[in-house]
Structure formats: C-alpha cells, structure tokens
Image 1 (spheres, rainbow, N blue to C red):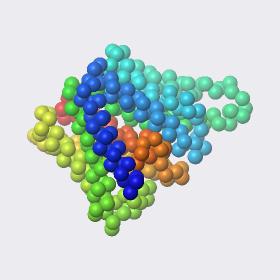
Image 2 (tube, helix red, strand yellow):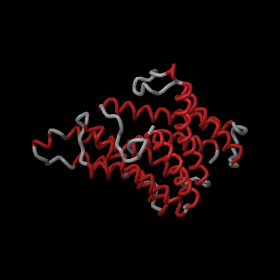
Image 3 (tube, rainbow, N blue to C red):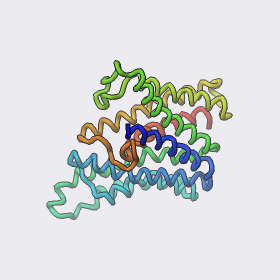
Image 4 (cartoon, helix red, strand yellow):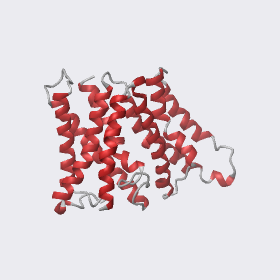
Length: 282
C-alpha cells in the first residue's frame, strides 16, 4: 500500500511539474526540457553501470556519466545554442575513440578488463544516452511544446493505464512475458489503448494537420506505435534487471525505484514518436 501511495503521489505531483516545464519554459528551444533529458541520462547511465557490473562489465562511474550524456548534450548544443548538427555524430565518434585508445598503455592487470570496459562504455553511450537524445530532438519541432507534452502523456498515461487495467482485469493473463511475470495482457492492452486515445485526441484538438491521412488516423497510428514502444521499453529494462538479479535500478524515485525504472519507456518510445510525428505532421 505504501508503494502504491508513493507511486500515485509521484504521478500526481511529477506530471504537472514536467508539464509546467514544457509549457512555461520554452526559452532557447526548450532548454529546460533538454537539461532534464541530460540530467536523467546521466543518472540513468550511473544506474546502468550497476546493472552491467553484475554481469562483469565494469566502467568507472565518472566515465559512464560523461559517455551517457554525449547525445543529449550534443543536441542541446545544436538546438539551443546554434552549434552545427554535425556535433551529434562527432561526439559519439570521440566517445568510441576514447574507449578504444585510452587504455592502450595501461598495466597488464588493467588490460585484462580492456574489452569489458569498451563494451560497458558503448552500452551507456547508447542506453540511455542515445535514446534520450530523441527527446531533445523534439525541442526543434515548430510546435515543440505541444508535441513534447503529447509524447509524455502517451508514455506516462500508458504506464498508469497499464497498471490499472492489469490490477482490475489481468489476474488470469499474467506470466506471458517471463522478463516481467506480473505484467498481464490486459495491462498491455489498457496501456496501449490509452496511448491511442491520447494520439487521437491530440490529432483532433491540438490543431495538428497531416497531408497524408485524414484525422484522427495519424494520431491513432502515432499513439499505437508509441504505446507499443513504451511497453517494450518497460519490458526490456525488466529483462535487464532480471538478468542481473536486481529488483529496481535504484531507489531515487519513491514508488518507482530508480531513474531507469522511470525513463525506460521514454527511451524506446522517443525515437518512434519523433520519426512518426515528423513523417505525418512536420
């Protein structure tokens, strides 16, 4: 019961706070949103090092933190401060370059961990860093505030609707996915259905216009694919935790666990939403 109350409080307080940042701090292409994406990428990368470490893939926390924010920080520099877009692939090349050459002349003892360190470093560059960079990329849309808010609603309401539907109707359909046996088919359907409704509503009410399909079909398709990606993101992180023998990625967020437990759905859903939104509307 305590965890349920904490989860509800985080949702009731956290969602309006994030919405306020999106709607009322649009300066420099929503720099505040980009800073949040960088912060969550940094904390998520630190938590991911713990998960990786359980499987023998060890990297220094400070190094993981820097590698984890390369993508969001580079796109923030481009979108909010006018740097060339080429900085985005460049920082990933530099990060990989560092991992490959920085231990060439290390001791024989350190050399034994050379390959595992490269693997861990590349992993944190991609997850959560590269995925969260797509949230920053959304800040460059013409109507970025509305688009980001719709995206966040699709993800967060998906999670809440999945939990509610699973609790009410999912008793007989659990255990389908071994990575997260408490999740149910009813929960999956409820979460994805909520994302579809938000997409349809946004298409009709937010003034989005598509030359490809009549309303609300673009919003329905975006909601369906984004909701599915959000669900898969949650399951993917559950699989990683189960593989490493841990329950939560951390304990920073009451009722939810760690930062990765909070942004896992965002990570996989962000590139899907961005690409489909740009295809239909931008």
